[in-house]
Length: 150
Image (cartoon, rainbow, N blue to C red; front, top):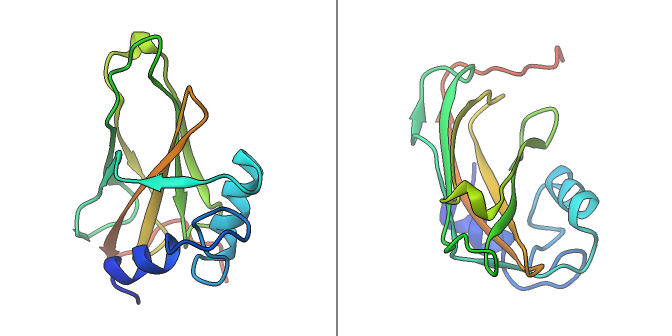
């Protein structure tokens, strides 16, 4: 299993193949395909404005607390339109999508998710100006959920 730092360095290294700076060789194909399906190819994804929080160790993957916060004033001129959560291990890589408006007040979402195994999740926030921002977090799951039977 790669460390969080190595995953971030590899995933957001600066290659401009399908999604700059996400490298197709570094990121799991399912995440790259899901991001491409949602945002199209050749979209530049910046880091820093998105904070994805997961517990570092999760006893049971059936119910894992997750929070995502995006730095944004949430005004009519500058707000988060959507937040997408991607998993590198779950059977469906796009595990959640949240739509926001300036009336939301704060760009923060807290929920519980199911995780198939220990992994790194990636959150991508789409801003109203078309820019994309990302953040990631990893957790170790001792009892997996979302098993596909194989």
